[in-house]
Image (cartoon, rainbow, N blue to C red):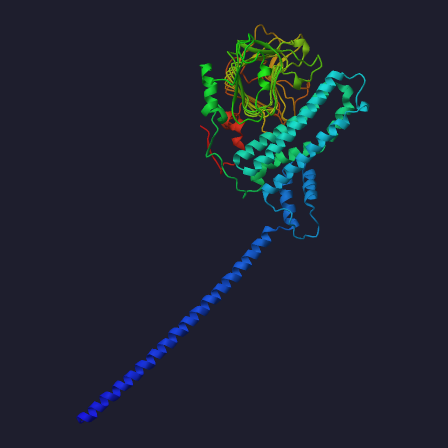
Length: 596
């Protein structure tokens, strides 16, 4: 091949390669653009699919957030099944929701347990308000017998109105607690609803004290109270079982560790900070009282009640009243709106409040207290409380406490029948002396009496002594009397038969634990409320690791509700942390328990 031909060949090849490269680039551009378009279409399609899926899911969730009437009805039925009055519970809540039978979507309420429980609280509150407004109409001349004691009846009637107002307050407190719902809310609400039930029962107890001639009046009040007592009981049952009814119900835990130790010293509301210091401080002058009471005029006031009248209402800060040595003959009431009041004296035998109101002279038991504490967070230290009416005047209370989280430290309570009325809410007594005859520690509080000296004394002729008379009326109430690490000894010369207690109500709950019991206690230990009629099996009376000559169990009563020697685990439920705080009702999966 000649050179010209060769050059022509090379030039032809270069041209072909150049054309090939141009064509290749075009193909690559087309492929790239096609790929980009394809990817774009895939992305668009994917986004569309996700959007439709999301919308579908959202629609599904929206539909699930609007339950049908059947869904709501089933949730209500689940709640009402745990109550003592399920029919009243279901009908009242269903009626309020206006659930139809057409199974159409209800937009009025969800199946949320919190909202349903709030509804039940509101229903109970409405009934209590209705009861309060109807009470004046019930007290008519036709309902009052001409032989009735007019003074006693008027006292009882005023007490009823006061107690129903207190019940309204406790249900309102429960509603407010639901706004920041935690495990502590469950404990508090159980306590306050238990108290609301006790308040209503105490109204009836006071009317019964007037006598059998008021039977018609009592029955009218009982009928008027039917709805409010049933609905309050239903609320208590629901909150007591809410974690069982709704296992998936999430409750924020407010405390990481709830102890349940036998022998614990103080409730957590006085276990630290200023309250513990106030109780344990020996130099009282360091406590810097807000006001001082002195009989000789050296203080701000000469009487305790004058000082109490100056207490700020519903204060979150502790208000200290120092009462100098002396016997103050007066009746003192720390009202329900007086919060966080502390009254301290120069010692239980040196600073004494003395009164003599009593049942025989026309005052219902509820109002006979020489000293009455109702406002939450009340503390007394180094004080003596006395009712001098004597055994012949029957019920005559030295102190009544209806104060939630109240503490009595190094105090004395001296009277005969019904000395210490632990009426309601959570209470703690430490290093005190309690002296009396018939039912001299009684009421329906959740109360722990610890390291105290309990002294029965000689009653009237032909009477016997009973240390406790507990008033629990509803199985869901978190109430009872726990007497722990105490000394049970006679006061002066005692010859009358003496018992640990008798069951006042159908669910009476009392325990003596780790106490030294003197040999003067009857071998039977306990006695019936109605002679020769054993109490119902629903009571809970128990003893645990007691010592002393009166602690023998061989001849104790054989009632179905009496437990002669319970286990450590059962006893731990009645110690300071468990019983007063109610931690034993919280699910074990939610909190850690230390039981040793």
